[in-house]
Image (cartoon, rainbow, N blue to C red; front, side, top):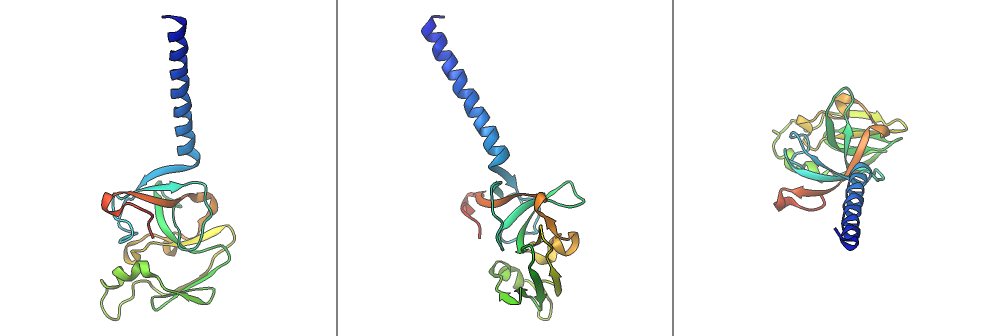
Length: 175
């Protein structure tokens, strides 16, 4: 091999190594793909939907997050309802946060599936401690969420949902 060929080979190897290191760093610290398992976020997410989560985030009310579930090996995806310090109350399927009612458009489809006189979400009232979040699944009748597993600590949060890339008909930023 000539000196020119060796220099070009080193250049290619260097480029591939840099690209690999960047890909690993981005996946580890910035973005990562996840696959939804189960029906707890239906209709927003169905089983086997594929998402990208961002690990560099600020959590806001109604964001969807992926977190390490307490007492489980699994990671869960849920919607943030209560931020640290919030008082969250559900009364007759109406959500109140700090005394202000919030309309939950993401559960409207599930509301159509219950019979008259039934509730989608049982009544509750909680105060979210500092450093924790209160999360609920959109499919309230089939969701293991803060009602049963308790508050979610900041350290448990893996990332915030930023993009759905599968199925192709639903590609985009989920609401």
